[in-house]
Each structure stands twice: as C-alpha cells, then as structure tokens.
Amino acid sequence: MKKITLLTAYILSVGLVSVMTHPTHTYATTPQNSTQDIEIKVRNSNPILDKGEFDSPMLLDPYNFELNASGFNTGKIVFNYSSTSLFDLDETVAKYFNLKLPSEFEQISELDKGNDLKSAITASYKLPTDTDYNTFTPKQIDTSHKGQINFTLPTSALISTGEITTIRVQIDFGQILDHLDLGPTFDYTKLIPNASSNTYEFNGALTSHSYFTNYPVETTKGYTKGGKAIE
Image 1 (tube, rainbow, N blue to C red):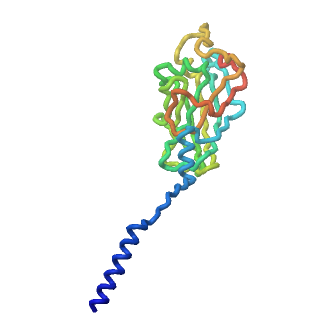
Image 2 (image 1 turned 120 degrees about the vertical axis):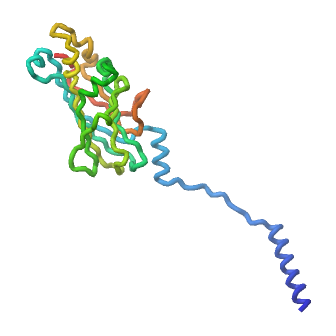
Image 3 (image 1 turned 90 degrees about the horizontal axis):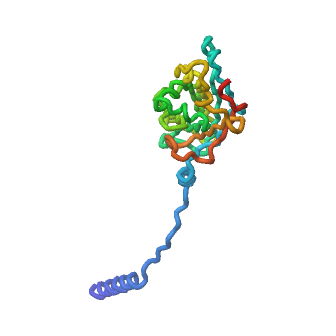
C-alpha cells in the first residue's frame, strides 16, 4: 500500500512539473466584423442613409401679387422625394429628412425666426409598410436653422435596405409674401431673387442628424424648371 501511495505521489509531482515547464499556448484571434458592425461604421463616417430622388423638375409656381389680391394662391414649390434606404434602419436609429433650400430662399426662411416658413409648409410621408401618407405635424418640422427645413420621421419606423420612403412637400412661399403686406409696387425679388443659373437648386437626404451646420455634399440635388419665383 505504501509503495502504491509513493508511486501515485511521484506521478502527480511529475505531471505538475510538466504543466509548469510546458505552459499552454494561446493564439490571438481577430474578431470578424458582422454586417451590422460594418453598416454602423459606414453610417458613422457618412451621415447619408439613403439614395434619394426628387421630382424632375420640381414644380415652381411663381408669385403674382395682383392675382393673390384677387383671391388666387400663387407662389408655391411642390415636389415628391423618394428615399431608398442604404441600410437596415431599426428603432435605434434617429431618422430625419433634411432639406436645404436654395440660397435665394434663405432670406425668407429667417422671417420671424423661421415661424413664417413653418406656417407655409404642408408635408407628409409614406413609410414602406404604410398604405397611406401621414402628415408631418408642426412639432415634426424644424425651420429654426437658416436655409434648412428638417423633418422628423418616427424613430420607431423599421426600414430595410432597398425599401422606399416617399415624402411630399409643398412650400407656399406666396403666403409668406402676402402676409408681409408690402403692396403691389414692392420689388419682391429683393426677398426672393431670380436664380442666377435659371433654376433653383434644392438638396435633400435621409440622415440621422436633426440639422447640419455644414450641409453634406453627397446629398441629392433637385431643380426647378425656371429660375423666377416672382412673376
């Protein structure tokens, strides 16, 4: 019995020395990025979440003071914007449609801190899973940043890659000019100049940013047919 005990102790001691003198090797492995990780990285480096398309051309109805004084409603920009998602957008992603106005419209965009412009906007959106359009409420329309209109879409909306969200916008700038009550002899091109390139250029994109200090150059461009907002 004593011999067996001594033999067992010897075997255990040899095994312990072997483990101590021959440590187990560990090999570092590089974690593989998932598709979601790659999408998040791309989104963080570029704020654009969609490939967009404006109506071509965008509808421009020039403002005519005399016609409006007679009960008509001239002075409108109307367009649809089709947003094709570049990523799977879940409820963790904030979603905004950012619209940059032509530089010629920046002056009226600042009137009453943007409130005049907000009151002149009618807009709605249709998510990929919806059958009808939903109206943007005043709280979902931000006009507090010069030359921009920022529309808030529901964060809870689930939009898969390649799905299309459609946005309709009407800007009744004639209503703004009417309310200024400047009369028939005023030169309204002082407020909205004629476009220098014979067309007004808009920029838009679906992003996760509520507004931009420096508007991204990768945004979609839309153009009006004709560059005179005043008849």
